[in-house]
Image 1 (cartoon, rainbow, N blue to C red):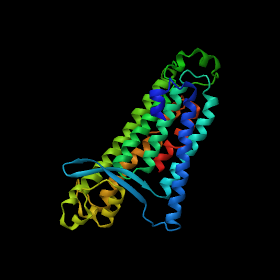
Image 2: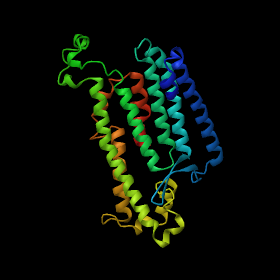
Image 3: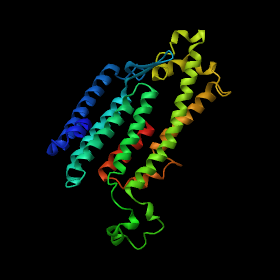
Image 4: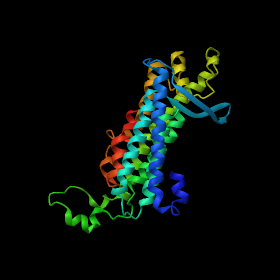
Length: 302
């Protein structure tokens, strides 16, 4: 839907909102079917192996990096949340955004954001998760600064007329959608830097163990960042046998986990990377309802 609106939106001006809603409604129907099939296959067995489909993406120095999908109860449920709430928000947005000069662009951005969120919840490896994690950040950047042309509160005469007399203590020169989107983008990059370092630690451990004879059967150069490979490597004691920065075993896993968690700290607006969230409310309220209440902030928990 994002691509259709991007390239053909001006030719189907009166149908852009309908294209977006139909696309998300279809995605919701597929998500429900996916959840039903997964629940039927797994039943009450919480130890059942998830459904995994991976394809080779690129081969670097004998390391096969893959892209694919992993479906278990959690990811199937989350995909229903993203598409279901996204559909409801878009339906309401028809009325909320009616008459806005950037009406068509809004629906395109919302579809792009939902696409990125689905990539996060259905990815089969850490690399793919990171790529879509960054696309989620880009989608939120678009929506937070949606009304980028609005002046700062200090120069907004309408705002100044309506402002309560006790509303003080805020530097209104930096209270604008354009500044809010930059602030959110930069602060999220700080968290995502830690996320990236954590992924590099996992990759370094997996590739260093790939040459050890005791782990040859695991084929660790074939999708080293795939979640199933990481789980299998941990069960076989790969992290206990590795030594990185003088750390091994639980200490090494803890270090990698802390860095991975930095990504969640940024996206979920947790201390100390939390101050971007109040400013981000300057985007459309409908955008905030799905980004900051239902999906992106919840992605950190996921």
